[in-house]
Length: 273
Image 1 (cartoon, rainbow, N blue to C red):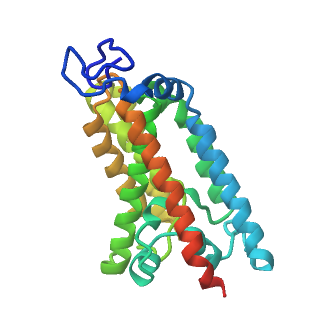
Image 2: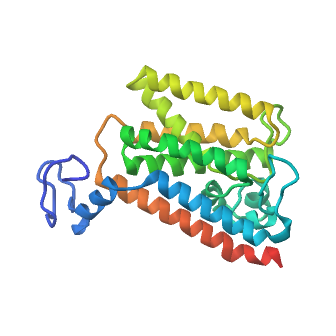
Image 3: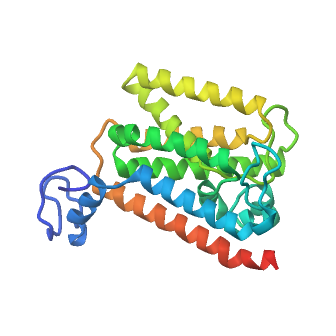
């Protein structure tokens, strides 16, 4: 199928006879990409990578693992989190680690932090894949994280003293990209389903109330993630069929995320010395 118009094409055709797209078979990789999309384990991928990185950062923290309170239980050392790609005004503007807006969404600062976020992703992931498709869900998730951590970093550098929102100098966690999913769901609800809009609104309000009442919550990252997910959904148009080039973009974004974590570790090990 042509990734642009959905017409049947040959795997090796030079051009789609319906819309004129060049190489509609994606150079022979079209069937493989469609098979990957059909079986893509979004929730399992996010939870698996996040838990693995959390365990690694705990082990590298050694005796400096946090545990003075329930909120800080099993919290990796801040220096280790920076090495692995935590974002915020400090890393982005102080250390010049701009790529951490990609990596920060896969790191967590404690047991409760990762437990809440992974539960949300595990519960919401299948519903998002049903509405948007696996590739577009990945795109929305990554774009939401980028938008959230970019806004948080900018706010921490230039608007650190605004009331209520509480900018963070160091920020991380899957809640920013998860809010991207909520933003996309809200956009979908505005155009297709009042129930989806109501659910997204309820989740957003509850999260904001929790964020205003509990210290240490990065509301800027949440708001930025919501906005990023909303814009991504509007651009991707969930009312249309998912295309093969969506899977290409999703794979590229996941590869860029992996590279951002690798770049963080390679360039950040000197910070521990």
